[in-house]
Image (cartoon, rainbow, N blue to C red):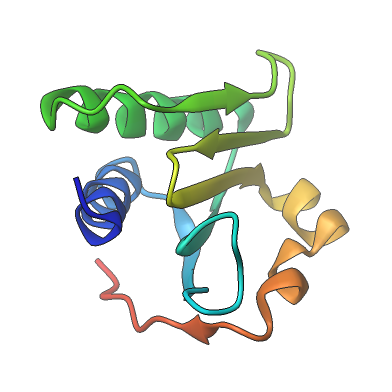
Length: 115
């Protein structure tokens, strides 16, 4: 499966679960760890976990099982490592605090369609 296909089902899952202020960065040529980095916000811990579960469900529908999830049920931040796509799902407060987007300033911010 290509990194663009993984990115596509990831963004669909985020949109379906109403992730907020979603941003995706093309880091090809800048990062050896992943091609794309995605960050989105959730209004609550419940929504945060719903977004992560939706991404996992979409991965399974695409017959993709090479992923890892970091974080706990009490976390305000979940990281989903899908190989060439890394997704950070934050509560709004945690996203403001960690400001991970600054790490990807060298990459190209992708234009995403808003629902």
